[in-house]
Image (cartoon, rainbow, N blue to C red):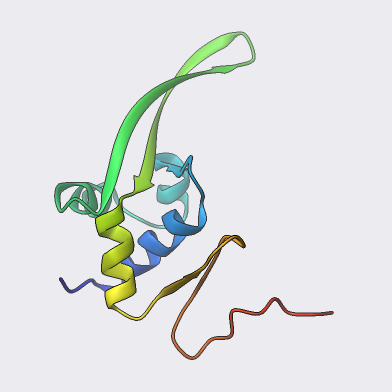
Length: 101
């Protein structure tokens, strides 16, 4: 399954977002369009769920996007790897060691 650069970037962001994933609004703020996110969901690479959360005294309806195992496998097939336990995602040729300053 081949991915576009934009799809790889979105999946990498979701993979590093942890168990809660990222809101659709956050993904859109990073430049991902609704149709691309829907394409990831339709291909089984991500899930989209509606959730209600409290924001002050109001209930807000949000859409949460999470990567699936198939999405992680697709990233791995393209050479991306996860650094377990550190929440990092690295590209081939990139060190998975944290930068020391």
